Length: 583
Image 1 (spheres, helix red, strand yellow):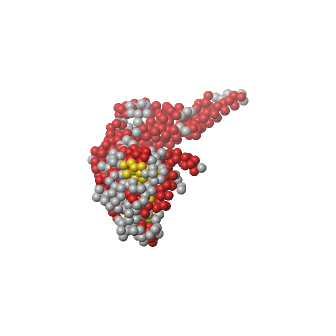
Image 2: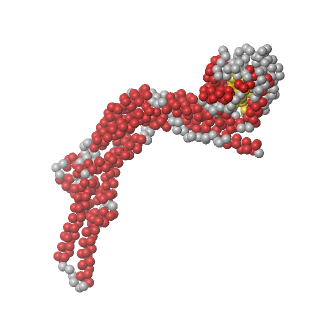
Image 3: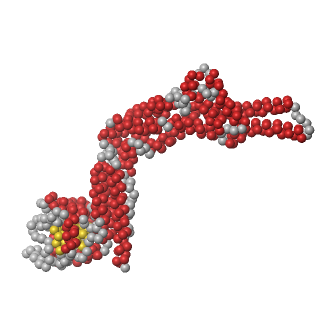
């Protein structure tokens, strides 16, 4: 049953590792697009390293558990390896420092040892050792603080990269050496706390009471505070006691028989027998957590400046929009007569019934430039020049160009302060160049402002649709239709009573109907007049356009700077990914 459960769990853990790798790849791609934010380059390199480490973990599915021993000089790492091998001296041990000059890989199977040694590269040695627990590979590494530590750093780092389990070995006589603890911190922080075993060796040199209980708990708290992770309780062992020939130095014999080496061996054997996939997933999640913490830390220090820069740019853009719209509204060609005439035409085209005929006739008579009255007016030449324009702007390209210039000048005035905030937020100092603001203004303003005449046209259309709605048509047509119906009913009724109405009746009826129609038409014109006022039309068009422009500027994607500001502020905005399962 245990084997079946483990077999079912492995594909699940593999799928979650793939999900983490995909998440990191997406974050790396996002960071790669941030060309102006300077911290992005270092974070992307860190993300790439983390992604490689996670993919390496995912590739270990069929590999035995790799336990790497790290620690300071004299802690007894090689002696501990020999104890694991049943007391046989397979790892060099002695007083010369450093004892271990290169990584040494030990496994009960020569093939497993050679495979891991090949991964470590360099001069890593593969040594078969029958006493090593089955399903496990032990890696002994050079000291982290000896005179050759710098020379051996790459070998230690490479071994730790391939580790599933880290055994941190300390000398019981002085375990809290600050240099030893600090040198291990960058290695340990890559692992989940359950994948780090703290081994306090040479416990036989202390009193038995000192090698257990409160002393070890205090040491665990010391390490947890220094490394920033939760740790399992340390195990106090005497590795030399388990050698075939301990060769105790005179006067350095064991002071007591207390030793938890058997428990350490059992824990390693249990880790090798099962739970490898879960342990590797936990380590991958730890790497992911460290990466996202680095991204968040890089952003946290710069977020206030970036948010201030974004707010300044938003205010500057809003002010630039107001300035540009004011220029457009002052543009030549937006005459009251033309606006009213355009509204008349649009309403007349949508109307039916008796008043529709009057509206159509009036629009043809009164239209400036096109209508009869317009052709007889003294401003005929100017009206003809305006006739070619579709919108109520006489020279739309010129008006838009002037508005773009107003936008650019307003943005340039606000740019120095915004640029300083951006630089404080980590952006390249090149953003201080005024040409960046000019390019931003050109890309924002020209496409946006060129749409404003269309919004005026749409406002006219919306106003015309409101006045051409069927309830409005029914209301204003009703008096004329009622008069015509009443005249018709009277004529038919008189005919059936044998009396023919005189011609004066119909003449009077015609004039009465016309008078009622003109009264309805006049009331409609009174209602249309304020609606066709150019100031009112512009005010409505401006309100609708400003709302749409604000939405457009909020999601602007046609210039890299505002896009990059938003992308940076959303970091690390990748999906949260698969959380650790409950244990």
